[in-house]
Structure formats: C-alpha cells, structure tokens
Image (tube, rainbow, N blue to C red; front, side):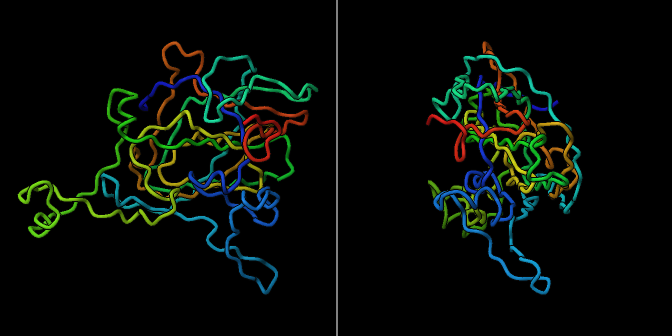
Length: 320
C-alpha cells in the first residue's frame, strides 16, 4: 500500500502546455514551427532547438529535443538500470458533475472557477479528482502519444504535475519522515579531508560535502529530493496530439489522464533497474479532516468535447 498524505480542498484550472511554463517539471517535445508556442509573444517562447538539414534535404533534424537522465547511481541498491520502452494504452477517465465548492485557492489565487461568465451555455464543466501522484526518482520518463491527431477535439490528454516540498516541510505535514528518502551520497574521508574541511573542530569526523555535480544541470533535470508533493502549486495542462512530454527525474505527476471518447496509446521511454521502490514511488492523496474534497482539476469542454484552457497563457477566461 502506498504512503498517503492529507490533501486540502483545492481546485486547479487547466493551462495550455508550452515549453516555457513546463520547464521546471520537464520538457515538452514539439515541432517549434507549428506548435502553439510558435504563436505566443516572443517573451513567452523558448528558443527552438538547434536544427540541421537531413535526409538529402527533405527533412529538418532538431537536435537534443529532450534529455534522458539515468541517476540510478544514487539509488540505495546500486543496481544498474537499463533503457526500457513500454506502451501504455490509457482509457478515458470518468469525470464527475460540477458542483460549487468552498475549495481553498490554488496557486492561481483569486481565479474564480465557479463563476461562469461565458453565459452562452456552450461549455460543460466537470471535475476530475486526483487521488494519487507518482514519481520516478532516478530517471526521466518520456510519454509519446500515437495516433492522436492535433485536430482531434474529442480526445485529449492532461499532464498534471506538482513541485517537490523541502524534506523538512514534508515531515511537518505528515508527522513522519518523507516517503522513500533519496539516500545521501557518502564519501570516504581521508585524514586530509578531516583537517582541511573540518567543522566545527579540527578533530570532527564530519566533512563539508563537496559541491553537487548536478548543480550545473537544468532545474528539471536535477534530483528533486525526498520531499512530498506541493499540492497547493499543482499544475494541470492539456496537450495536443503533436506534443510529447518528458518528466524530469523525481517530478511528482499524475498517471497519464485521457479525456474524451477513446483510449490513447503512449510509447514510454525511461530507465529502470527492476527494484520497485526505486523505479516508481506513489503517494495517495486523502482529503484532510473536515475538507469538503481533495485535489480536483476543473475540466471545461466546448460543444465538440475540446478541453478549454482556463488559466495562464492562452486562457479563455482568467482573472489574475
């Protein structure tokens, strides 16, 4: 049974998935010339990947569109990992009818998700309960949808992620140490180290740790630490059929969620060493005592079933 944590009542709106807003969580893989990001104002774009001509000039090759991370050298078992490619066939989720709520505000502050200003009756609002999050502490994980047209308005998928709380805050929130802590890197101490790096006494055996080799990595590629998910800053994005995503190692995320009429096939690429708790760690979200509900994503769809963007860049309606 996975570890659980109390979840306050929070309703989170859906955002447009772009490389800029997703950067702290991982990478969005898309054609930079035809993606939604190409139509955004320049300050809201990220520079496109370097490209070269290929296939006798009949193709454009974009270089390093995402980065695979293998951090299993940090895993307690030290068991080496190998690159694996799996397929997930994800069925559409069941949504529940919308009802007014006294939910606490999410990171969007005073965005009133229960205030319907559209007034034309063309939108249907439903609710998606988020009951579990997972992370892969020592590997990136890339989801590549197959057979989903960019023009498909009846079936889409959601990408739901959360930052990682500091370990100290995680312990306060649950009354116990964070689940599955990432081990500290131990290094042998020489006599020279003890005297050169000693604190507070030259006779101490506690050495100052060396600078992390991961500090030079992009934030999404750095180990996230052992903390619990920061539910008040959970984000929900809707993706097009032309977009794939890479979750950074250790990023808390919901299992892939399909909205619409039919399943979506995903090819999933990651590293794995076969040690269950090192390959995937889950945490159940249970409503706090007295909470009306737990973590909820509001899903607005138009008459054709297309999910509407309600917050951030490209929002249909936002009061920020």
